[in-house]
Image (cartoon, rainbow over all chains, first blue to last red; front, side):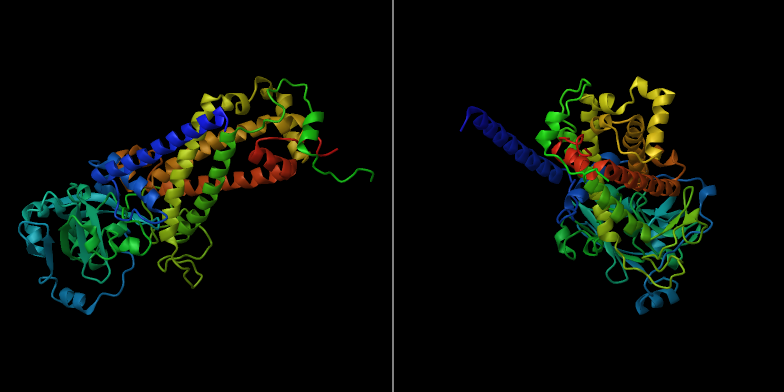
Length: 252
Length: 261
């Protein structure tokens, strides 16, 4: 073995060790600072993780764009949904007076809210764009109560890392990290363009996260679970979307 | 015809008989390792981005101008293709399977690879003066005669001259600069403008383009321009001698000059 090749070998070995350690340290720090999404495994895990980590660092406190009233879409689109279940139709026939939103998990006071109760809290509105992953979009005014207000009311544990949220319709649930859960534009919406939230748009209650694509804004909301463990839900990928091949984090 | 069919000459032979008068640093060196590696990484990434991008477009093959647009509003233009969504009125009477899940993940992961590789290429191109020496047109290139002779040469579909095997003519230089510094930055910008999170951090990303739907439409059009460039690029590589040009971009060496004797 010549000197050159020995030196090359040592240098290459050191570089490789440094590289592996750097990746290890980066992974540890990323985990510590909440920069790793629940669907970080698999072929597309590196891309999902890079995107989520970058956006978390870049957009922790940024606000989604809001629009003037004149830009509210005259032709919004409700999108297609599966035919509502019999259970949903019964709630609808009774004008949703019996609809309940249950909040539990890592909270001091597990609570069940009626729609009227939610409406009694300080109401907020935002004129934001709904953006579908397919490419289309519309702007509407959304009225609701910030999720952070509800999390304060129920005494969410500061150790919690995620809020899982569920539709009354089967296999329709998502989760968001606390940066989004405590974000001032994350609403539990009950109104649209100054009226009741129409059923087509997710009424009586819809989660609204304007910094992520439309599929994170789950319709017919009836349950929230505050947690620090994604493994307890479904396949442990954070939501039903990654189980169907879609990214958990949809801020892109 | 007395001409023999052309056959590639072994590299050493070509090198030995093709010493140019021009003061070139090295006869055989054509493309640096970094240029070659980034070229092929970007080639593969580009294919993945085109395929996955096409799959995503199929879920809504309509394009709008401005901030918003959906199937209830008039498109600026639409593609005459079937869709993977029942929602889109295409007139075909059938719906293609939904491929958006893997397409989107592949699109974004590959975009990371392309952007990082592209950055490496651009930074090294500046540091090593590759752009200044090999891509920025020379002063003499801007003479009327120089430009017309290159254009006429192309229009007559003549094989490249000897000098062109080792360097780029003015049309090539301007085209590559346009692709590297206009089209690629534009396609990255318009892509980022479709991210609601990125727009929340830097709203000008999308407002400067005239809105989210304008950004999406521009992303599509710029991608089409890049695909058009790819076709012309591959056609001209084929015209110039596919084997020798591929050899130059893979091994870094060229031995083309005697190919046609």
